[in-house]
Image (cartoon, rainbow, N blue to C red; front, side, top):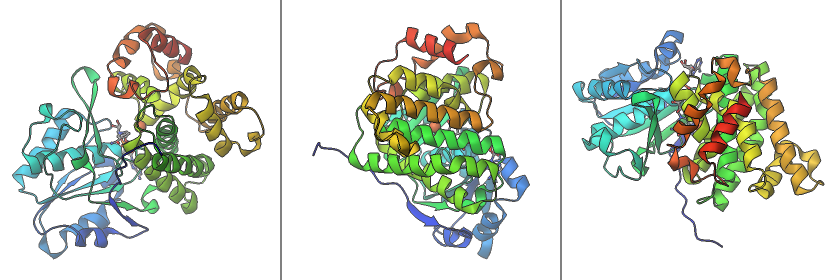
Length: 381
Ligand SMILES: NC(=O)c1ccc[n+]([C@@H]2O[C@H](COP(=O)([O-])OP(=O)(O)OC[C@H]3O[C@@H](n4cnc5c(N)ncnc54)[C@H](O)[C@@H]3O)[C@@H](O)[C@H]2O)c1
Ligand SMILES: [Fe+2]
């Protein structure tokens, strides 16, 4: 067996009504709850707010996290925690609040400076106790040691370091039944892309991440349409949440690649939802990778289209791309860049920005040059 390293994720509390169990695991002292205003308005966080505050614990609620959170937001959340002298952090929401919670817990616990810890394994200090509760089935951020922050000029920077892995994560699918249709679609496709890019990750793919990625793709591809069409279908929502978590564990160890590298500039410059940007670039980047990743795509094709098992690897790999494209189109998301206010002549600028995502591009099964990236944006237009 080839040598490999695998890092597990947080401990898990799964099932409905976990608020009290989570609160019991918090250390004594004030707690910072990081969430977004929409989730507070929906009352989704109420049970957690009540459980954490039970017994008189001071609770600092920071609910100003926007989609694709900025550095300013992260620093404001950290300042709120510092002012409240908090002893723990709970992140409640989609990837955006969870990513802010993770880094806030780290900055509060370590006292380090944000601009000195960007990148892979730079942050090695101690964070505050950290619990994460996802309300989207997408990023898998509750499973990962990664936090993505939008910085100056719309550039997305990440801290990817072991201390950011949470102590506990809650997987409660009842929190996801109110997700709007487009968010269910976009976040679900994000998770599917995590599974595929982990499975073809060039440097760090390993047997455990492979098993997780395959099972993630099985759960996600079979349940995305049901979750979109029947939002209250708890079985489908549970499969999506579990699939997104498995995909998160997979890509924590076998990192994502070209689809994310080309998706990020669309999110950073145009503020499109992260999952949507992945959906827009998916078929084009997979098409670019087709020859280099043919055998691996062929293996994944049997999961999403079992009837192709007898075909040759070229046909199966093509079938993976077609099946995913059909899934994206039937999800209701408008599938072209032009549908989202992006001009054709932005392609060179987007390509230049994508080249900055070197941490992702190195994981792609084949090279994506700046000229390739421009051609892929033009094809996606
Ligand atoms: N840390 C990681 O490993 C990782 C991986 C991928 C992406 N990301 C980052 O995560 C962010 C995207 O996260 P996301 O896609 O989960 O979206 P999000 O957290 O930005 O939320 C999107 C919208 O959905 C709403 N929402 C969330 N849960 C809801 C619910 N249950 N019911 C109704 N509305 C709900 C939110 O209020 C928000 O308006 C991006 O910043 C992206 O870069 C992080
Ligand atoms: Fe993603």
